[in-house]
Length: 306
Image 1: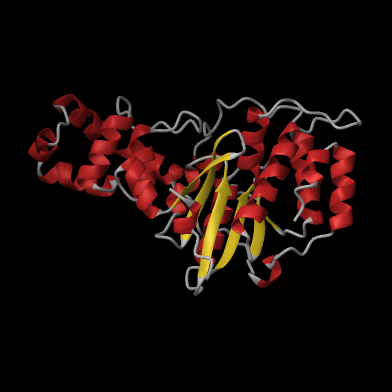
Image 2: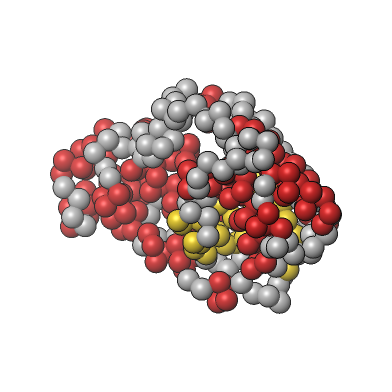
Protein backbone atom coordinates (compact mmCIF):
# COMPACT_ATOMS: atom_id res chain seq x y z
CA UNK A 1 0.00 0.00 0.00
CA UNK A 2 1.23 3.51 -0.64
CA UNK A 3 2.55 5.56 2.25
CA UNK A 4 0.74 8.65 0.93
CA UNK A 5 -2.69 7.07 1.42
CA UNK A 6 -2.07 5.93 4.96
CA UNK A 7 0.00 8.63 6.63
CA UNK A 8 -2.23 11.53 7.54
CA UNK A 9 0.07 14.51 7.65
CA UNK A 10 -2.50 16.62 9.46
CA UNK A 11 -2.08 14.25 12.41
CA UNK A 12 0.83 14.21 14.78
CA UNK A 13 3.02 11.20 14.07
CA UNK A 14 4.75 8.99 16.63
CA UNK A 15 7.26 6.49 15.27
CA UNK A 16 8.19 3.61 17.57
CA UNK A 17 11.37 1.73 16.63
CA UNK A 18 11.45 -2.02 17.29
CA UNK A 19 15.20 -1.70 17.68
CA UNK A 20 16.22 -5.35 18.05
CA UNK A 21 14.11 -6.45 15.10
CA UNK A 22 15.60 -3.77 12.84
CA UNK A 23 19.15 -4.59 13.96
CA UNK A 24 18.63 -8.32 13.38
CA UNK A 25 17.18 -7.71 9.92
CA UNK A 26 20.08 -5.41 9.01
CA UNK A 27 22.63 -7.89 10.40
CA UNK A 28 21.38 -10.66 8.11
CA UNK A 29 20.68 -8.44 5.10
CA UNK A 30 23.90 -6.44 4.83
CA UNK A 31 27.57 -7.35 4.40
CA UNK A 32 29.88 -7.43 7.42
CA UNK A 33 31.05 -3.82 7.28
CA UNK A 34 33.77 -2.73 9.68
CA UNK A 35 34.72 0.64 11.10
CA UNK A 36 38.20 2.15 10.56
CA UNK A 37 39.06 0.62 13.95
CA UNK A 38 37.99 -2.85 12.77
CA UNK A 39 34.71 -3.03 14.71
CA UNK A 40 31.77 -4.85 13.03
CA UNK A 41 29.22 -2.26 11.85
CA UNK A 42 26.94 -3.90 9.23
CA UNK A 43 23.86 -4.12 11.48
CA UNK A 44 24.52 -0.69 12.94
CA UNK A 45 24.86 0.85 9.47
CA UNK A 46 21.52 -0.67 8.43
CA UNK A 47 19.84 0.44 11.65
CA UNK A 48 21.11 4.01 11.20
CA UNK A 49 20.12 4.07 7.51
CA UNK A 50 16.59 2.96 8.47
CA UNK A 51 16.42 5.66 11.17
CA UNK A 52 17.42 8.37 8.69
CA UNK A 53 14.98 7.03 6.10
CA UNK A 54 12.16 7.15 8.67
CA UNK A 55 13.03 10.70 9.68
CA UNK A 56 13.17 11.79 6.04
CA UNK A 57 10.04 10.00 4.79
CA UNK A 58 7.69 9.85 7.78
CA UNK A 59 8.63 13.21 9.33
CA UNK A 60 7.79 12.15 12.89
CA UNK A 61 6.73 14.58 15.58
CA UNK A 62 7.73 12.01 18.20
CA UNK A 63 10.30 9.20 18.20
CA UNK A 64 11.03 6.42 20.70
CA UNK A 65 12.82 3.05 20.60
CA UNK A 66 11.98 -0.24 22.31
CA UNK A 67 14.53 -2.91 23.19
CA UNK A 68 14.64 -6.51 24.34
CA UNK A 69 16.72 -7.27 27.41
CA UNK A 70 18.91 -10.38 27.83
CA UNK A 71 16.99 -11.66 30.88
CA UNK A 72 14.31 -14.35 30.45
CA UNK A 73 10.80 -13.02 29.76
CA UNK A 74 7.48 -14.17 31.17
CA UNK A 75 7.17 -16.40 28.09
CA UNK A 76 10.37 -18.26 28.99
CA UNK A 77 9.01 -18.75 32.51
CA UNK A 78 5.69 -20.05 31.20
CA UNK A 79 7.34 -22.29 28.59
CA UNK A 80 10.96 -23.25 29.11
CA UNK A 81 11.37 -24.26 25.45
CA UNK A 82 10.38 -20.82 24.18
CA UNK A 83 12.91 -19.77 21.50
CA UNK A 84 15.21 -22.57 22.77
CA UNK A 85 16.16 -23.60 19.22
CA UNK A 86 17.50 -20.17 18.31
CA UNK A 87 21.28 -20.01 18.02
CA UNK A 88 23.18 -17.81 20.43
CA UNK A 89 23.38 -14.21 19.26
CA UNK A 90 26.37 -13.70 16.97
CA UNK A 91 29.36 -12.19 18.75
CA UNK A 92 29.59 -9.46 16.08
CA UNK A 93 26.00 -8.34 16.74
CA UNK A 94 26.21 -7.83 20.52
CA UNK A 95 28.44 -4.71 20.47
CA UNK A 96 26.39 -3.25 17.62
CA UNK A 97 23.23 -3.44 19.71
CA UNK A 98 24.99 -1.54 22.47
CA UNK A 99 26.36 1.01 19.99
CA UNK A 100 22.86 1.55 18.58
CA UNK A 101 21.90 3.00 21.95
CA UNK A 102 24.66 5.57 21.49
CA UNK A 103 23.24 6.49 18.07
CA UNK A 104 19.80 7.00 19.62
CA UNK A 105 21.31 9.13 22.37
CA UNK A 106 22.92 11.43 19.79
CA UNK A 107 19.51 11.76 18.11
CA UNK A 108 17.88 12.39 21.50
CA UNK A 109 15.50 9.44 21.06
CA UNK A 110 14.34 7.89 24.36
CA UNK A 111 14.63 4.14 24.96
CA UNK A 112 11.97 1.98 26.61
CA UNK A 113 12.54 -1.53 27.97
CA UNK A 114 11.62 -3.58 31.04
CA UNK A 115 12.89 -6.87 32.52
CA UNK A 116 10.64 -9.82 31.78
CA UNK A 117 9.09 -8.28 28.68
CA UNK A 118 10.05 -8.33 25.00
CA UNK A 119 10.24 -5.21 22.85
CA UNK A 120 6.90 -6.20 21.27
CA UNK A 121 5.24 -6.01 24.70
CA UNK A 122 6.78 -2.59 25.33
CA UNK A 123 5.38 -1.45 21.98
CA UNK A 124 2.00 -2.90 22.96
CA UNK A 125 2.05 -1.04 26.28
CA UNK A 126 2.84 2.28 24.60
CA UNK A 127 0.08 1.78 22.02
CA UNK A 128 -2.36 0.94 24.81
CA UNK A 129 -1.38 3.97 26.91
CA UNK A 130 -2.03 6.26 23.93
CA UNK A 131 -5.31 4.67 22.80
CA UNK A 132 -7.36 7.74 23.81
CA UNK A 133 -4.91 10.29 22.36
CA UNK A 134 -6.64 12.39 19.71
CA UNK A 135 -5.16 13.21 16.27
CA UNK A 136 -2.17 10.93 16.75
CA UNK A 137 -0.96 8.31 14.29
CA UNK A 138 1.42 5.64 15.61
CA UNK A 139 3.81 3.96 13.17
CA UNK A 140 5.74 0.93 14.43
CA UNK A 141 8.97 0.40 12.50
CA UNK A 142 10.02 -3.24 12.71
CA UNK A 143 11.96 -5.97 10.98
CA UNK A 144 9.32 -8.69 11.36
CA UNK A 145 5.55 -9.17 11.22
CA UNK A 146 4.82 -10.06 14.85
CA UNK A 147 3.79 -6.47 15.56
CA UNK A 148 0.98 -6.60 12.96
CA UNK A 149 -1.44 -7.62 15.72
CA UNK A 150 -1.09 -4.07 17.09
CA UNK A 151 -2.38 -2.51 13.85
CA UNK A 152 -5.64 -0.60 14.21
CA UNK A 153 -7.46 1.05 11.30
CA UNK A 154 -5.24 3.92 10.10
CA UNK A 155 -4.36 4.90 13.67
CA UNK A 156 -1.66 2.30 14.35
CA UNK A 157 0.43 1.20 11.36
CA UNK A 158 3.42 -1.11 10.94
CA UNK A 159 6.30 0.00 8.72
CA UNK A 160 8.17 -3.24 8.08
CA UNK A 161 11.36 -4.04 6.22
CA UNK A 162 10.71 -6.50 3.39
CA UNK A 163 14.04 -7.02 1.64
CA UNK A 164 17.25 -5.60 3.00
CA UNK A 165 16.69 -2.30 4.74
CA UNK A 166 15.42 -0.10 1.91
CA UNK A 167 12.38 -2.03 0.65
CA UNK A 168 9.52 -1.42 3.07
CA UNK A 169 5.81 -2.14 3.36
CA UNK A 170 3.34 -0.08 5.36
CA UNK A 171 0.45 -2.02 6.87
CA UNK A 172 -2.83 -0.57 8.02
CA UNK A 173 -5.77 -2.75 9.03
CA UNK A 174 -7.03 -3.11 5.46
CA UNK A 175 -3.58 -4.29 4.30
CA UNK A 176 -3.44 -6.91 7.09
CA UNK A 177 -6.89 -8.21 6.08
CA UNK A 178 -5.82 -8.28 2.44
CA UNK A 179 -2.75 -10.38 3.28
CA UNK A 180 -4.27 -12.83 5.77
CA UNK A 181 -8.01 -12.75 5.17
CA UNK A 182 -8.75 -11.57 8.71
CA UNK A 183 -7.92 -8.64 10.95
CA UNK A 184 -4.96 -7.96 13.25
CA UNK A 185 -6.72 -9.11 16.43
CA UNK A 186 -6.93 -12.67 15.09
CA UNK A 187 -3.22 -13.01 14.27
CA UNK A 188 -2.41 -14.61 17.68
CA UNK A 189 -5.16 -17.17 16.99
CA UNK A 190 -3.66 -17.93 13.58
CA UNK A 191 -0.23 -18.35 15.18
CA UNK A 192 -1.72 -20.40 18.01
CA UNK A 193 -3.03 -22.91 15.47
CA UNK A 194 -0.12 -23.09 13.02
CA UNK A 195 2.62 -22.52 15.58
CA UNK A 196 5.80 -20.57 14.96
CA UNK A 197 9.06 -22.51 14.50
CA UNK A 198 11.15 -19.34 14.88
CA UNK A 199 9.86 -18.92 18.46
CA UNK A 200 9.40 -22.66 19.05
CA UNK A 201 5.66 -22.17 19.61
CA UNK A 202 4.19 -25.61 18.98
CA UNK A 203 0.66 -24.75 17.81
CA UNK A 204 -1.53 -27.69 16.80
CA UNK A 205 0.43 -30.57 15.20
CA UNK A 206 -0.58 -31.13 11.59
CA UNK A 207 -2.14 -27.69 11.08
CA UNK A 208 -0.25 -25.41 8.71
CA UNK A 209 -0.84 -21.98 7.21
CA UNK A 210 -3.63 -22.99 4.84
CA UNK A 211 -5.80 -24.85 7.37
CA UNK A 212 -5.17 -22.26 10.08
CA UNK A 213 -6.31 -19.50 7.73
CA UNK A 214 -9.49 -21.36 6.81
CA UNK A 215 -10.32 -22.00 10.47
CA UNK A 216 -9.74 -18.39 11.55
CA UNK A 217 -11.49 -16.90 8.51
CA UNK A 218 -14.51 -19.16 8.99
CA UNK A 219 -14.83 -19.40 12.77
CA UNK A 220 -12.78 -16.56 14.27
CA UNK A 221 -10.79 -16.87 17.49
CA UNK A 222 -9.52 -20.16 18.93
CA UNK A 223 -12.12 -19.88 21.68
CA UNK A 224 -14.87 -19.50 19.06
CA UNK A 225 -13.42 -22.37 17.01
CA UNK A 226 -13.76 -24.75 19.96
CA UNK A 227 -17.22 -23.44 20.82
CA UNK A 228 -18.31 -24.07 17.23
CA UNK A 229 -16.62 -27.49 17.26
CA UNK A 230 -18.66 -28.49 20.29
CA UNK A 231 -21.92 -27.30 18.74
CA UNK A 232 -21.64 -28.37 15.10
CA UNK A 233 -18.83 -30.53 13.69
CA UNK A 234 -20.63 -30.67 10.38
CA UNK A 235 -19.94 -26.97 9.84
CA UNK A 236 -16.22 -27.78 9.86
CA UNK A 237 -16.60 -30.47 7.21
CA UNK A 238 -18.65 -28.04 5.10
CA UNK A 239 -15.74 -25.57 5.42
CA UNK A 240 -13.40 -28.23 3.99
CA UNK A 241 -11.85 -29.33 7.29
CA UNK A 242 -11.20 -33.07 7.14
CA UNK A 243 -12.33 -35.39 9.98
CA UNK A 244 -8.65 -36.12 10.76
CA UNK A 245 -8.00 -32.41 11.39
CA UNK A 246 -11.16 -32.15 13.51
CA UNK A 247 -9.87 -35.01 15.69
CA UNK A 248 -6.44 -33.32 15.98
CA UNK A 249 -8.15 -30.08 17.04
CA UNK A 250 -10.12 -31.89 19.71
CA UNK A 251 -7.00 -33.60 21.04
CA UNK A 252 -4.89 -30.43 21.15
CA UNK A 253 -7.18 -27.76 22.57
CA UNK A 254 -4.77 -26.90 25.41
CA UNK A 255 -1.83 -26.65 22.99
CA UNK A 256 -3.81 -24.23 20.80
CA UNK A 257 -4.86 -22.00 23.70
CA UNK A 258 -1.39 -22.01 25.28
CA UNK A 259 0.30 -21.25 21.96
CA UNK A 260 -2.07 -18.32 21.45
CA UNK A 261 -1.10 -16.99 24.89
CA UNK A 262 2.59 -17.12 23.94
CA UNK A 263 1.89 -15.40 20.61
CA UNK A 264 -0.16 -12.54 22.04
CA UNK A 265 1.57 -9.22 22.62
CA UNK A 266 1.05 -8.08 26.18
CA UNK A 267 -0.03 -4.48 26.78
CA UNK A 268 0.56 -4.21 30.51
CA UNK A 269 4.34 -3.77 30.73
CA UNK A 270 4.96 -1.37 33.64
CA UNK A 271 6.46 1.53 31.74
CA UNK A 272 5.50 5.19 31.81
CA UNK A 273 5.42 6.72 28.34
CA UNK A 274 5.17 10.45 27.76
CA UNK A 275 4.66 12.03 24.36
CA UNK A 276 6.33 15.16 25.66
CA UNK A 277 9.53 13.24 26.43
CA UNK A 278 9.46 11.67 22.97
CA UNK A 279 9.02 14.96 21.10
CA UNK A 280 11.50 15.08 18.20
CA UNK A 281 11.05 17.26 15.12
CA UNK A 282 14.75 17.45 14.32
CA UNK A 283 16.14 18.02 17.80
CA UNK A 284 19.51 16.31 17.59
CA UNK A 285 23.16 17.24 17.90
CA UNK A 286 24.40 17.47 14.28
CA UNK A 287 28.08 17.81 15.20
CA UNK A 288 27.97 14.74 17.48
CA UNK A 289 26.12 12.81 14.79
CA UNK A 290 28.81 13.66 12.20
CA UNK A 291 31.55 12.72 14.67
CA UNK A 292 30.10 9.30 15.43
CA UNK A 293 29.34 8.63 11.75
CA UNK A 294 32.96 9.44 10.83
CA UNK A 295 34.26 7.27 13.68
CA UNK A 296 32.13 4.35 12.49
CA UNK A 297 33.00 4.90 8.82
CA UNK A 298 29.44 5.92 7.85
CA UNK A 299 30.58 8.68 5.51
CA UNK A 300 27.73 8.11 3.04
CA UNK A 301 25.19 8.65 5.82
CA UNK A 302 26.51 12.09 6.77
CA UNK A 303 24.87 13.56 3.67
CA UNK A 304 21.55 12.03 4.75
CA UNK A 305 21.45 13.82 8.07
CA UNK A 306 18.30 15.92 8.36
